[in-house]
Image (tube, rainbow, N blue to C red; front, side):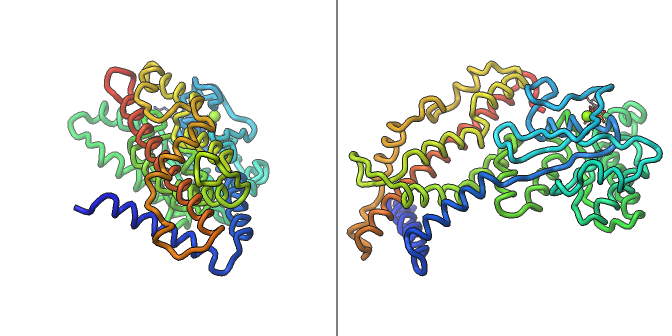
Length: 400
Ligand SMILES: Nc1nc2c(ncn2[C@@H]2O[C@H](COP(=O)(O)OP(=O)(O)OP(=O)(O)O)[C@@H](O)[C@H]2O)c(=O)[nH]1
Ligand SMILES: [Mg+2]
């Protein structure tokens, strides 16, 4: 078994080498401004997702499910048997307002004109479309899909309310009922119609917005994520509710790039020496970032309150499994204490690397912040997993 200190040492050297590599053909100021610009770019990254389909197909319910809300939560899209959405209505992610789901008006009229409809809803605005259908496949679905493709946009075809279809089939055919074969039939039916309309490889997902962790919903979320690039992908992933333990892990993996940038900005931009430490860094950036981590992992008060309401668990029970300091407890002193701990744990780089003056100070500051944020990320991600597990425990209402 490898000696843990040796592992830490090798990690530190590797990260330090990567840090030094940045300065091969750039000065400190240039590296700093690139890191800062990329962080700004991430903050301003916008994603507009259009949700369209027949009236009553479940568009608003789908939007709520994808935002981790139920119809009764604050800021949820209104749903119900008589509600209709007449104008495109935007629903930003509660913790990431630049990622927006658009609830488009339903397409029920028999004289539906897909191109007029798409013009009216301002189709240029959206990065991609989700077409929601329930019950029978309609020609409006193919007309809309064709037009979206013609306009050079991507679409995903969602067949919603499959929980209802399965219940109906089981009631009507109790002796021969098989969930898999019903789902397979539905999938084939959607594919057949879309392919007949010339869409060769449609992406089809069968799901229930009432049971969003089942059927193809996780696959849809993964596909949406995989089809996005760079910062849009990161923004989408970090806005998602913690629908599964895998999503928490994916968030954690994706956060490492962000932590790299935050640490660079902190160690190279508004650097202020901290008397207790040999590290000089920008505590404000660190503080702001750590508070943002809570939001990305659904540990802020708003997300916990929603989860408590949805699962019937008292919020205190969810908070009780959180080990990292609460959002309101994180302050300058806590950050300094954590940096101090990290600095002490780092191997003595000074003795081992032939690096000169200011670069060494910046390097140590960078390494200290980088590893401090990584260990905070670890804690927060573990907290998120524990909160999810507690919320899912049997005695409360089931999580969707
Ligand atoms: N069982 C089940 N019911 C659903 C599902 N999705 C939506 N519903 C129900 O279907 C009804 C209509 O859902 P909405 O989400 O309001 O549909 P919509 O497409 O937004 O409707 P409009 O805005 O009127 O066009 C509501 O009563 C929902 O509770 C689902 O996946 N399963
Ligand atoms: Mg609606």
